[in-house]
Every structure is written in structure tokens, then in C-alpha cells.
Amino acid sequence: MHQEYERLKDILCKMGSMLVAYSGGVDSAFLTKVAHDTLGDSAVAAIASSATYPSSEIDSAIELAHNLNVRLICLHTDELKNEAFARNAPDRCYHCKMELFRKLNKIASDEGLAFVAHGANIDDLGDYRPGQKAARELGARAPLQEAGFTKAMIRECSKELGLPTWDKPSLACLSSRFPYGTPITSNALTQIDAAETLLHELGFRQVRVRHHDTIARIEVESSELPLMLDLGMRNRIIARFKELGYTYVTVDIEGYRTGSMNAVLDIK
Image 1 (cartoon, rainbow, N blue to C red):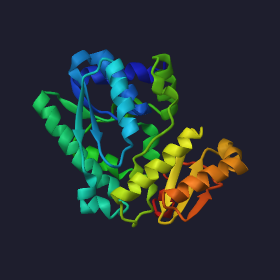
Image 2: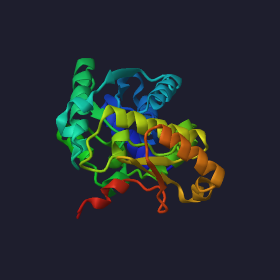
Image 3: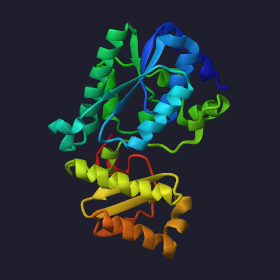
């Protein structure tokens, strides 16, 4: 186990109690597991459901929390009612996380928990993450960052701890599929979710369907591009995507990469 693992446990011990912002992804599952192992019932998890997150992911996250014997609090957020979020400016995630962490702070206070914690890691510092700014402003802690964990380290330690999420593909909320400036709507979120569900059912591991109005721009891992371009596979995907309302179905030959929508931003 990495030395960062012992550092993390020390940080968690000093925090004493916490509410973990939990999604069932690689990072938050690892943080929840270690926090519960370290603090017992003084570590509680909270999961937020919304139209921007696939319901299947919520279901699997709840099942994992149950298997970990972690107390889980479920809440709902409705980002689409917030015009600052729905208009989809580059600071979209800031407004989403402000709503989430305000609610988490209220729950933590009601439960007598000292901190709200989230699963950001060192790698997240290298991308444009306005949501982390909101978390900091509202006093949330990022113990994995504080302990020096990279994503690769989290996966390695998760595997050693027997977490089924150790090799889970990265997942971001569905609003990240829209180009900045394109309004986020409930119908488009449903369309994207159905399109990505199909790709997963067809065996693709890491997928993004970037939503450019009538154009779907599919990102898969570079190693899976040959499968994507197989004639039979193409025909199945095209037929279903057109049923969902896309006029044009494209494949991004650069492959999947985190934060590809941020390429238009002038980030220094």
C-alpha cells in the first residue's frame, strides 16, 4: 500500500467525523471505504440524484454503499431550475456544486459531523474544475488531495482493498457532454443517457457522447476505435442514434479524453 494511504488515515483521524460526498465512482468509493474503516459510524456518505446523472449509476452506488455497511443519506438536486447552470457557461459546475455543498453542509450540521469531504485527487488539479472552487468556498475538504493521491494510486489501493470500483471507467455528469453555451435541457440529457447506455450495452468501456445539437460526437478509447468502425457495429449505432433524434453520427478519431469540451477555453 502507498505511504499516502497511511497519510490519508491520519488526516481522517484528525478530522474526527465527516459527511462524504459520494457518487459510487472510483474516488468517492475509495474515500468512503477508508473513512468508514478509520472512523466507523462517524463517517457517513451522502449521494445526490438529479437529471444530470444516470439512474443506473445511482442504483449501483447505493448497492455498493450497502455492501460496505456505510450509512448512506440520499438527497435530490435540481440544477436545471438554476438558470446560471442551465445556460451552460464555462462556470456551470460552480453553480451545480454550490447547490450540492450547501445541502451537504446542512446535512452535516444536522448530523453533528465536523466536515464535508469529497473525492478530488491530485490529478484534478491539472484540469479546469470550477466545482472544486465552490467546494473550497463552502469549506469542504479533499482528503485524497491532501494526502497526495493520484488517480492511479487510488485505483491500486482500491484493488488491494477489494473495491469493485478499482477499474471502473471515469464518469462525469451528463452536462459535461454539451458544448459551453448550449443550454442544458431535460430532453437532451435523456437523449445522451440513452445513447451512452447503448454503447455500454454493445461492449464499449469508456464512452462519451458529446451533444452538438443534431450531431453526436462519440468518444471511445483509442483501442476500441476499430470495433466502433466495424460495419455491423456502425450500422447498429447509427440506427439507434437516429431513433434518438440525431441527424449525424460521428466518431472522434482522437478518442476519449477527459474534459475535451474545455479545449475551447483559454486556460492559463
